[in-house]
Image (spheres, rainbow, N blue to C red):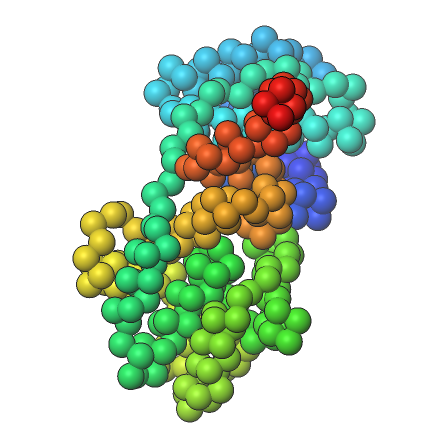
Length: 310
């Protein structure tokens, strides 16, 4: 069994480009499923499983078992994704002819609309940052590019000088699973970051290993995600905004404001680094006008109605 899991781990890393944390989660989920399949078979050490004998019914019973344990639909869906991926790997390796999990339906998930800040609220947050100090100018540059490019906080704190292509108007990002994308950056954010690098960062004694990191603390080390979270909480409170705001709120706001402005959904997907368009589609629910405009612009019945009016 360990040989199969080792091969599956290599497949996730080399072909699916998943992060170490995601790989470990998938392996944990597969082990949980295999334990379920071998319950009561008398195996004390490493269980032996004939994958060709595992049926659709067994996978469905496993999902019922997870439900009985009280797992949320989100947890159930994540575990099923790991199991499905494992069987897909076995099919590719010709260990089995067909995945028994292929027809198992993913539990329906509730889609929660993320909190967003209006553009006016974002400007309020920016306005309370003290720009008379090096830390303040760094903080403003950091939040400007967080909002201007829709970055994840992990992408922000790991942003490198060598990834800034300001002459071309882009920054290069390595997101989840080390997937690379190019994101356009606006002139205001670009200027703030450039000024911070040229006027403030240059006076910091940079610690070894942090030479290429854009945003540094006063000791010359990269910022932590927790530090960014705390700074944002402070600025939001000082701006008098009563919403629950985190670094991810700026990413949500970036996407929502683009959609409201009429941006193409595929373009927003690329900029956010979403693997699936359905992840990006949640932002259309924040702006009902987008849905109405899409129907009016593209549905043939709407075209016919408009012709009658003419």
